[in-house]
Structures are given as structure tokens and as C-alpha cells.
Image (tube, rainbow, N blue to C red):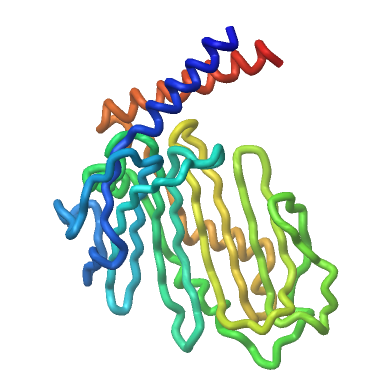
Length: 280
């Protein structure tokens, strides 16, 4: 029995590792407009198909003032960890290092099937992704008020996903921080302050979509120097003003191969779980 289990894992490993991915180098495909599913180019420059890759990825990064979009296709030779899988990460927010906050949006798509980071796949991703972005309404929180007062920062924590020191002396605080996470089972918040000299303000909302079990996890972050800028209510506003959703049915319905892959991944997990219980 152990021999058959070993053989099965070898077959699964071989199948998963023998994939081809598109490779388009960073900075080779920049466009001076905001790319959407309606105007995405049909071809990218200086691209190739790399065999024997371990993981395929798509990265797309948008900026405004001036409008700019960069697309990168990655053929990763590194063996993916157990934490990696078929997933989509979406981030939207503002960085402020000067007088004007800089708007940024980005997605990272990871997959492990043959040629799964194609332009047609990117078009399906964009057409299935829905974003309502009104975060600009909160950018006033990134305007630092001087002199900074440490008592402006709200304190509180119930986090397990990161360290959160809420006991920093008020006199040592130089910037307020709020980070949060919501998944299928819990909501976690870390509201504290930083003792480092602030080099920028940050306002960010990120969503992680698991394509295998169709679940989502949301993260948010604000680093600011404004009174009451890191309260839990601000976290609620960040999520409300930057709604990020993904239509799994639309994405998989347009690609029968992807639907089959999804079913196969679930069966593989059940199969592995059965044998783990059998030999536990």
C-alpha cells in the first residue's frame, strides 16, 4: 500500500511540475493608459513560452497621474510551497511621500496548470473582477498634523496573524497604525503606533481569492499621523469605500478546462486526506 501511495504522489508531482508558462519580462510591457478587460492588448512584447516551469504568474500594476499600466508574465522555476496555490491577490490604495497621495492598484495571479498565465486568462480575470474604488474620500487621513501627538492613536488588538504591541509609551509614538484581517471564521485587528520616523502614509485594501475553494480573505492597513485615523471605524470605511469582489462562476464558466482542474484539485485533496487518515 505504501508503494502505491508513493507512486501516486510521484505521478501527481510529475504532472504538476511539467507545465509551460508564458514569460514576459518586467518593464517590457508598459502602457500609457489604464488597461481593462475591454482594451487589453491581444499580444505582449518580447514574450516566450518556458517549459518545465513549476508555477505560472500574472502581475499587473496600475498608476494614475499620469495613467500607466505594466503587465508581467512569470514562469517560476522554484518549487511552490504548500501555502501557494491557485489564487488571486488584489490590492488597491494610496502611498503618500510628498504633497499628493499616489494611487496604486495591482493584482497577482498564481496558478499551476499548463499555460494558465496567458493573455486570454488575464482577460477572464479582469472581466470577473469588480472593484468600486472611492478610497480617495479617505486620503485626508494621510495628511499629517504637526506636532504629532501619541495619544491620537487608538490602541487595541485581538490578532494572531502578526505581532501587535499595544503597550508602546505614548511619548515614543510617531505614527498611528491600523491593520486588519477578515476570513471565513474570524475578524482580527491590530491598532497601535509606530516608533519609527514616518517616511510615508499608507492607505491600503487587499483581497485574497482562493480559486480552489472559492473563499476570500480581506486585509487592510492605514499608517497615518492624524487624530483618530486608526480606529476600527476607519477600517470599516476602508472596506466600504473600496469594495473588491470576484465572480467565480463567470470565471470558471468560460473555461471548461479550469472547471475540470478545480474538480480535480478537490478530488486530489480528498484522496490525499484519505491516505493520511489511513496511515495516521
